[in-house]
Length: 164
Length: 376
Image 1 (cartoon, rainbow over the protein chains, first blue to last red):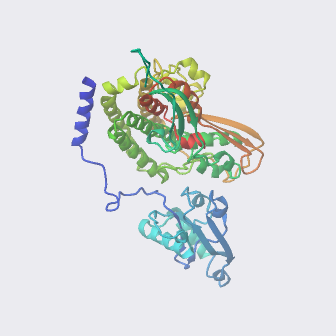
Image 2 (image 1 turned 90 degrees about the vertical axis):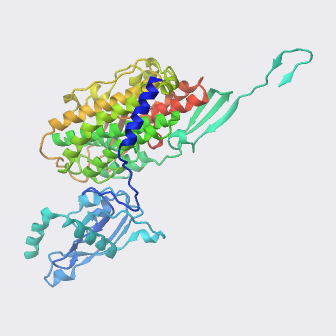
Image 3 (image 1 turned 180 degrees about the vertical axis):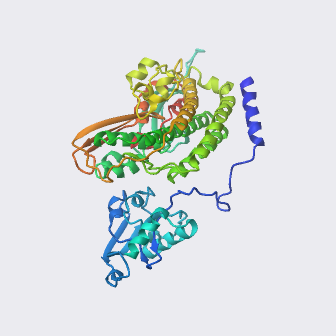
């Protein structure tokens, strides 16, 4: 009997605490800085082109093969406006297959991909979860607008390269 | 009922009944099925049936690179992904001969111990839930698990499938805001464990339902190679953190909680005490953690030399081992997983036979199995 009363005392103490439940769709808890949503591509604002050069390293390292990338020659490089010889031609990411592991971001040599915080991607059609290049760039832009540059430590390096 | 002619003696015609429990049953912790034969209310035969959640993780690992396999290990015991990550990267590091930096080892220990607290929270919560204390203790324990998941989110950005550990270290250093949050949590946690104890430890209902129920003797446990809290509840002080220290566990001072009889109540108590010890380990690791690099210089694509390696860790559920064979290619030639939950199930039949239906659920709950790991 004593044990039960002790337990009840604990329950009563807990009842007096403020609740920790948050009514989810109406209220959102703040996400951690590193929170990983689905990946997005970054846009080089200075040259007005994608940072992705289409090297496919992310596609090769992806555990679920959710990316489809193709590469082309960069016209802006021929004109002398850009330091990127090659440019991404098409980039499709199957969000329904992405497992948000962050390996693509880790292996990218050009700091062109970033884990955005976009995670509420409910959609009615299956094809709706295929993100094309424009969508991915929009996701990356949204991320940088909210959180500042995705790779602040490498920002200076990029500028030097552009100057050359 | 047959009444014999002219005699007051009554004979009752009985027969054994076979009942399927699961695969969709709230008490089976996933898609586990037990084909149980009952004599009245007493279990006379039990046959565990599993494989409903089989995804072929071991086979899938053979066509993935060493780094990609980390994402598969997250999905084994999904309540203790960090421990799975740790066991796998230890095996891969052994195979490739990569030495992680000291800071990485401390970070991994902190993560593994936090994961143990979270996993035991769930194990105990669902065990009490199976006893019929619907939701109250479970929700308390969910509350603390949530805090641990928040800590993990700070570090690696994910809450369940972390993929945090990498071959040669971890994927990212601890962020600035992590340490204050961890200190706050570690200072609060013993109070919460006291709360669980006050709520449950002396509860007469819990004691009458679990004390001296389904005693697992030390001899039987060792013969069936049961590991983890189940083995320690039987009185065997076997903990890989002490008996075969990996990472930096030999630098910490902690006890191994051991049960006395090996009954269901002991299995409950051992888990409760282990949470306290984990808090102690995290506290010591926090004080000792050195600064420095968090990841050794290792290529993203490793080609380990031809050979084999086995590494094991003390996962929340028992000894989790990874056996890797390399043929000098980018993917393991063979990846065998020694899943503790699966091997602990060996004694299920022996323990449950002779007990009643109501005990079956409780005994099974005290195993703390995870189907993601059993079926792999």
